[in-house]
Length: 257
Image 1 (cartoon, rainbow, N blue to C red):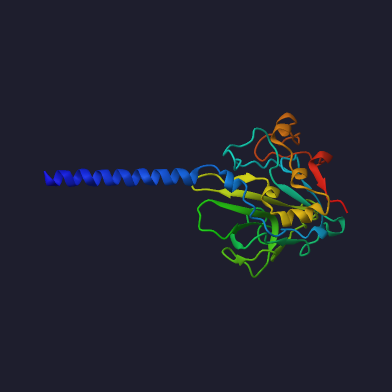
Image 2 (image 1 turned 90 degrees about the horizontal axis):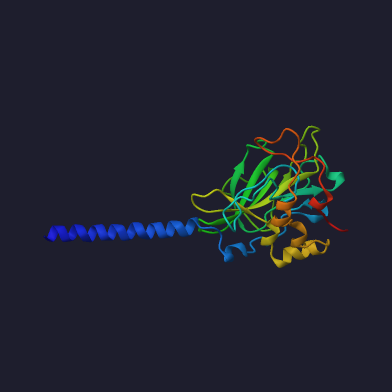
């Protein structure tokens, strides 16, 4: 009888532990909370604005279809669109490497170095704020030549130059843009995206305001993009969907000088 009661107690304890783990796991896997969505973790400008002339807008028809699940909903938006920014450099910097700065927007670590796009000298770099949480925001540079002294796991400080844009890309070996994005990761879920400028603090946004830009200027609403679908380049209906090489004026936000 005593053994039977002991077994029952053990089963109850195990069920409580499993139930608790399920609750914790579901909490960690849930979509971003309102507090997480409002978090201003970008405390230093990731760019030297003296080198930059404009940005493609969040949800633009520039480049190619870039849609991960949305941080707020966990769902992908309905049609092709670019949910990142192409950073457009000054004409005199077009095609030049080792010049246009990529700057750490916060204290943190280099969490991902992805060479799949172009290999060393043309990397996708993820920077992650210092935190022990399994739910993380990340700032992402695309087409970056990372400083030789840095590697995966290296610590970085807000305002530190971590590398430079690779602008010797494309069929002509010269381009005038590279990319930035913000992602949100949580256990057992695909990385989600959000508008980068929504996570800049007031000090950083004030730097853009000096050039006549606000966070709102850099976003096309989901409703508008759903109504005005991006025109697709011929032959790109399957696989990685590309848009027209001619960007609409409505897709670009220019710095005013």
